[in-house]
Length: 232
Image (cartoon, rainbow, N blue to C red; front, side):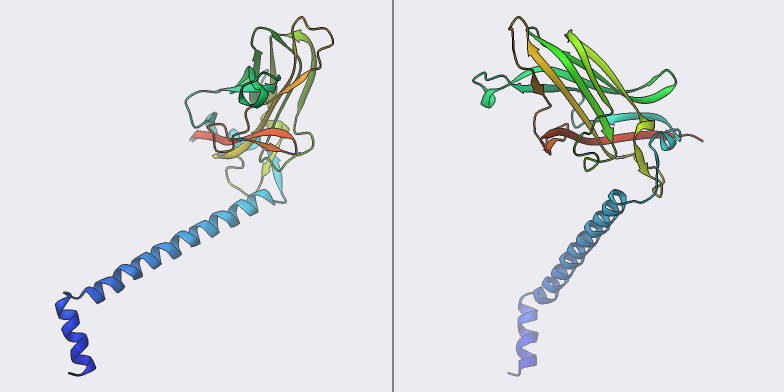
Protein backbone atom coordinates (compact mmCIF):
# COMPACT_ATOMS: atom_id res chain seq x y z
CA UNK A 1 0.00 0.00 0.00
CA UNK A 2 1.45 3.31 -1.01
CA UNK A 3 1.44 6.43 1.14
CA UNK A 4 -1.13 7.90 -1.23
CA UNK A 5 -3.38 4.84 -0.86
CA UNK A 6 -3.05 4.95 2.98
CA UNK A 7 -4.12 8.59 3.10
CA UNK A 8 -7.02 7.88 0.77
CA UNK A 9 -8.21 4.90 2.83
CA UNK A 10 -8.08 6.89 6.09
CA UNK A 11 -9.86 9.84 4.54
CA UNK A 12 -12.57 7.47 3.31
CA UNK A 13 -12.93 5.80 6.73
CA UNK A 14 -13.26 9.16 8.48
CA UNK A 15 -15.65 10.62 5.94
CA UNK A 16 -13.15 13.28 5.02
CA UNK A 17 -12.55 14.21 8.68
CA UNK A 18 -9.05 15.45 7.93
CA UNK A 19 -10.26 17.96 5.37
CA UNK A 20 -13.15 19.10 7.59
CA UNK A 21 -10.86 19.46 10.62
CA UNK A 22 -8.46 21.69 8.69
CA UNK A 23 -11.43 23.75 7.46
CA UNK A 24 -12.67 24.24 11.06
CA UNK A 25 -9.21 25.15 12.31
CA UNK A 26 -8.86 27.57 9.41
CA UNK A 27 -12.14 29.30 10.31
CA UNK A 28 -11.13 29.54 13.97
CA UNK A 29 -7.79 31.04 13.01
CA UNK A 30 -9.46 33.57 10.74
CA UNK A 31 -11.93 34.58 13.46
CA UNK A 32 -9.16 34.82 16.06
CA UNK A 33 -7.04 36.97 13.76
CA UNK A 34 -10.08 39.14 13.00
CA UNK A 35 -10.78 39.62 16.73
CA UNK A 36 -7.16 40.53 17.40
CA UNK A 37 -7.23 43.00 14.50
CA UNK A 38 -10.41 44.63 15.80
CA UNK A 39 -8.90 44.87 19.29
CA UNK A 40 -5.78 46.54 17.88
CA UNK A 41 -7.94 49.00 15.94
CA UNK A 42 -9.87 49.83 19.12
CA UNK A 43 -6.65 50.28 21.11
CA UNK A 44 -5.16 52.56 18.45
CA UNK A 45 -8.39 54.57 18.28
CA UNK A 46 -8.42 54.99 22.06
CA UNK A 47 -4.75 55.99 22.05
CA UNK A 48 -5.50 58.60 19.39
CA UNK A 49 -8.45 59.83 21.45
CA UNK A 50 -6.40 60.14 24.64
CA UNK A 51 -3.37 61.73 22.96
CA UNK A 52 -5.20 64.09 20.61
CA UNK A 53 -3.61 67.50 20.02
CA UNK A 54 -6.61 69.60 18.98
CA UNK A 55 -9.55 70.14 21.29
CA UNK A 56 -12.92 71.88 21.46
CA UNK A 57 -15.29 72.31 24.43
CA UNK A 58 -17.51 69.27 24.95
CA UNK A 59 -20.55 71.52 24.57
CA UNK A 60 -19.66 72.25 20.93
CA UNK A 61 -20.38 68.59 20.05
CA UNK A 62 -23.51 68.16 22.17
CA UNK A 63 -25.52 70.74 20.22
CA UNK A 64 -25.71 68.19 17.39
CA UNK A 65 -27.98 65.96 19.53
CA UNK A 66 -31.38 66.45 21.14
CA UNK A 67 -30.74 64.08 24.05
CA UNK A 68 -27.58 63.76 26.18
CA UNK A 69 -27.42 61.70 29.37
CA UNK A 70 -25.10 59.67 31.55
CA UNK A 71 -25.58 55.91 31.12
CA UNK A 72 -24.92 53.53 34.00
CA UNK A 73 -24.93 49.73 34.05
CA UNK A 74 -27.99 49.72 36.31
CA UNK A 75 -31.15 51.82 35.91
CA UNK A 76 -30.42 54.44 38.55
CA UNK A 77 -28.45 57.65 38.64
CA UNK A 78 -27.59 57.86 42.36
CA UNK A 79 -24.25 56.59 43.62
CA UNK A 80 -23.55 55.74 47.28
CA UNK A 81 -20.77 57.66 49.03
CA UNK A 82 -18.72 55.85 51.65
CA UNK A 83 -16.37 57.12 54.35
CA UNK A 84 -14.02 55.40 56.77
CA UNK A 85 -15.96 56.03 59.97
CA UNK A 86 -14.27 53.22 61.89
CA UNK A 87 -17.52 51.28 62.10
CA UNK A 88 -16.78 47.56 62.17
CA UNK A 89 -18.25 46.66 58.79
CA UNK A 90 -16.80 46.68 55.28
CA UNK A 91 -13.35 47.37 56.68
CA UNK A 92 -14.46 50.43 58.62
CA UNK A 93 -16.24 52.04 55.67
CA UNK A 94 -19.84 53.13 55.97
CA UNK A 95 -22.30 54.60 53.50
CA UNK A 96 -22.80 58.18 54.66
CA UNK A 97 -24.66 59.63 51.69
CA UNK A 98 -25.10 59.62 47.93
CA UNK A 99 -24.67 61.72 44.83
CA UNK A 100 -27.23 61.75 42.03
CA UNK A 101 -25.89 62.59 38.56
CA UNK A 102 -27.94 64.03 35.72
CA UNK A 103 -27.63 66.36 32.75
CA UNK A 104 -29.52 69.63 32.79
CA UNK A 105 -29.54 73.13 31.38
CA UNK A 106 -28.95 75.78 34.06
CA UNK A 107 -29.16 79.48 33.18
CA UNK A 108 -28.68 78.68 29.51
CA UNK A 109 -25.66 76.42 30.09
CA UNK A 110 -25.90 72.65 29.57
CA UNK A 111 -23.95 70.49 31.98
CA UNK A 112 -23.84 67.85 34.71
CA UNK A 113 -25.67 68.32 38.00
CA UNK A 114 -24.29 66.71 41.16
CA UNK A 115 -26.97 66.42 43.86
CA UNK A 116 -25.30 65.45 47.14
CA UNK A 117 -27.04 64.35 50.32
CA UNK A 118 -25.98 62.60 53.54
CA UNK A 119 -27.72 60.35 56.03
CA UNK A 120 -28.97 61.50 59.41
CA UNK A 121 -26.12 62.03 61.85
CA UNK A 122 -23.72 63.50 59.29
CA UNK A 123 -23.31 66.92 57.66
CA UNK A 124 -21.54 68.13 54.55
CA UNK A 125 -18.86 70.77 55.11
CA UNK A 126 -17.27 70.75 51.65
CA UNK A 127 -18.21 69.43 48.21
CA UNK A 128 -16.16 68.78 45.08
CA UNK A 129 -17.34 67.96 41.55
CA UNK A 130 -15.51 67.45 38.27
CA UNK A 131 -16.07 66.17 34.73
CA UNK A 132 -13.40 65.38 32.13
CA UNK A 133 -13.07 63.48 28.86
CA UNK A 134 -11.13 60.67 30.59
CA UNK A 135 -9.69 59.86 33.99
CA UNK A 136 -6.11 60.59 32.92
CA UNK A 137 -7.00 64.29 32.91
CA UNK A 138 -6.29 66.46 35.98
CA UNK A 139 -5.08 63.59 38.17
CA UNK A 140 -3.97 65.93 40.98
CA UNK A 141 -7.15 68.00 41.40
CA UNK A 142 -9.89 66.86 38.99
CA UNK A 143 -12.60 69.24 40.18
CA UNK A 144 -14.11 72.29 38.50
CA UNK A 145 -16.10 72.92 41.67
CA UNK A 146 -14.79 73.10 45.22
CA UNK A 147 -17.09 74.66 47.79
CA UNK A 148 -16.86 75.07 51.57
CA UNK A 149 -20.33 75.20 53.07
CA UNK A 150 -21.99 75.66 56.42
CA UNK A 151 -22.78 72.15 57.76
CA UNK A 152 -25.69 70.92 55.66
CA UNK A 153 -27.51 67.72 54.79
CA UNK A 154 -27.56 68.44 51.04
CA UNK A 155 -25.81 70.51 48.39
CA UNK A 156 -26.00 70.77 44.60
CA UNK A 157 -23.13 71.58 42.24
CA UNK A 158 -23.07 72.11 38.49
CA UNK A 159 -20.28 71.58 35.94
CA UNK A 160 -20.94 72.88 32.44
CA UNK A 161 -20.01 70.90 29.35
CA UNK A 162 -18.16 74.01 28.21
CA UNK A 163 -15.69 73.49 31.09
CA UNK A 164 -13.79 70.55 29.64
CA UNK A 165 -12.43 69.69 26.20
CA UNK A 166 -12.87 66.86 23.69
CA UNK A 167 -10.71 65.87 20.69
CA UNK A 168 -11.64 68.08 17.76
CA UNK A 169 -10.69 65.42 15.19
CA UNK A 170 -13.38 63.01 16.45
CA UNK A 171 -16.74 63.71 14.82
CA UNK A 172 -18.79 63.35 18.00
CA UNK A 173 -16.10 64.54 20.41
CA UNK A 174 -16.81 63.04 23.84
CA UNK A 175 -20.27 61.80 22.81
CA UNK A 176 -21.02 58.08 23.03
CA UNK A 177 -17.73 57.50 24.81
CA UNK A 178 -16.86 56.93 28.42
CA UNK A 179 -16.26 60.24 30.16
CA UNK A 180 -14.95 60.73 33.67
CA UNK A 181 -16.80 62.38 36.55
CA UNK A 182 -15.38 62.90 40.03
CA UNK A 183 -17.62 63.37 43.09
CA UNK A 184 -16.30 63.95 46.62
CA UNK A 185 -17.57 65.23 49.96
CA UNK A 186 -16.03 66.20 53.25
CA UNK A 187 -18.41 65.23 56.06
CA UNK A 188 -18.54 65.54 59.84
CA UNK A 189 -20.50 63.67 62.45
CA UNK A 190 -23.21 65.83 63.99
CA UNK A 191 -22.88 66.78 67.65
CA UNK A 192 -19.26 65.63 68.01
CA UNK A 193 -16.99 68.55 68.91
CA UNK A 194 -13.63 68.53 67.16
CA UNK A 195 -14.63 65.73 64.79
CA UNK A 196 -12.12 65.63 61.93
CA UNK A 197 -13.91 65.81 58.54
CA UNK A 198 -13.91 62.58 56.55
CA UNK A 199 -13.58 62.11 52.81
CA UNK A 200 -16.65 60.50 51.26
CA UNK A 201 -16.23 58.89 47.83
CA UNK A 202 -18.10 56.36 45.69
CA UNK A 203 -17.00 52.77 46.48
CA UNK A 204 -13.85 51.62 44.67
CA UNK A 205 -15.34 49.20 42.13
CA UNK A 206 -13.92 49.58 38.58
CA UNK A 207 -16.07 46.75 37.20
CA UNK A 208 -19.18 47.93 39.03
CA UNK A 209 -22.18 49.78 37.57
CA UNK A 210 -20.58 53.22 37.96
CA UNK A 211 -17.01 52.32 36.95
CA UNK A 212 -15.47 54.10 39.95
CA UNK A 213 -11.78 53.56 40.64
CA UNK A 214 -9.03 55.08 42.76
CA UNK A 215 -6.57 57.25 40.82
CA UNK A 216 -3.89 59.14 42.71
CA UNK A 217 -5.82 58.69 45.96
CA UNK A 218 -9.06 60.09 44.50
CA UNK A 219 -12.17 58.25 43.34
CA UNK A 220 -13.07 58.79 39.69
CA UNK A 221 -15.93 57.22 37.77
CA UNK A 222 -15.75 56.27 34.10
CA UNK A 223 -19.05 55.78 32.30
CA UNK A 224 -20.70 56.58 29.00
CA UNK A 225 -22.01 59.98 28.00
CA UNK A 226 -24.79 58.91 25.62
CA UNK A 227 -25.78 61.34 22.85
CA UNK A 228 -28.99 60.48 21.00
CA UNK A 229 -31.19 61.77 18.19
CA UNK A 230 -28.87 63.77 15.92
CA UNK A 231 -30.32 67.12 14.92
CA UNK A 232 -31.41 67.22 11.29
